Image (tube, rainbow, N blue to C red; front, side):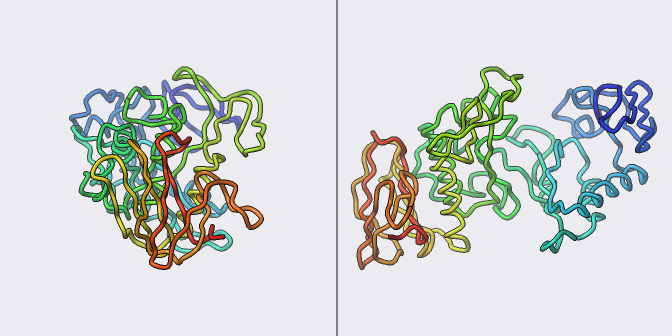
Length: 363
């Protein structure tokens, strides 16, 4: 619960001293004792104590369980299709599993089946709580994903090793994982592995790889510029440039052509696997997605090769350097011959280190 006393937007009161939340209601015996999370080698401390001074509900209590489920069911009735569960590592897996299983099926217009639950479990190794304790009943945010790709696309690990990208790197199975390069927390952290908008070329390359590769459920941040950890969003609403990017201090990564066009790539190749993997044994790689798409990357040196694809013959618009508009490409084009060989030219001096083509952007 909140770490301060006062009144909420609906006018209801809360008192952290007496642990009184009468509008719910929650009272003192609904909470864990007032210890503090200070030992990440102790699962009980992590899950039974207060994180950063926030009163910690004991979800094993039937009354707490019922109130949380009541709230989630109300959101489902409003049309919500899924939930991000913050700080899931600070909650007991059995309690979360019981809560999720008690939530009703989706009822919104055009929706059916179970709500999608995905959980924040920061597990980079070396702590008592493991992500594998949570993935049997909900998806898990895979924090190692962005850290490893951040290292690779900053040249700290050769790209050719990505040939077996996935669980062999210590990641969860893709069906259990939500993949991302940066989020609102690690974007402002101090880890040199994490790429953000502040280092745009390798950042766009890492996102392009994420959206081209079939691993996981992918997630993209859309943020605002900042110079210090606690900086809030701009006062002004964003304006828009002619190239779709934002103004007034908003970064709007989702409006970058290289990113939204790669969302189109991912949609186009959905349901296909990786084929035609190629590398120079170092910092250049390329791969296809069935007969639907093909992508190439370079971190060192130029690529000027005819690479094997499974695409139909024709001329394709490179969705990184441009877009297909009114029957013509605003960026580079790539020719695929009758044997599926694509003439890939990608130079290290170019603005982006990626070329990507797919069947929905064929001239």
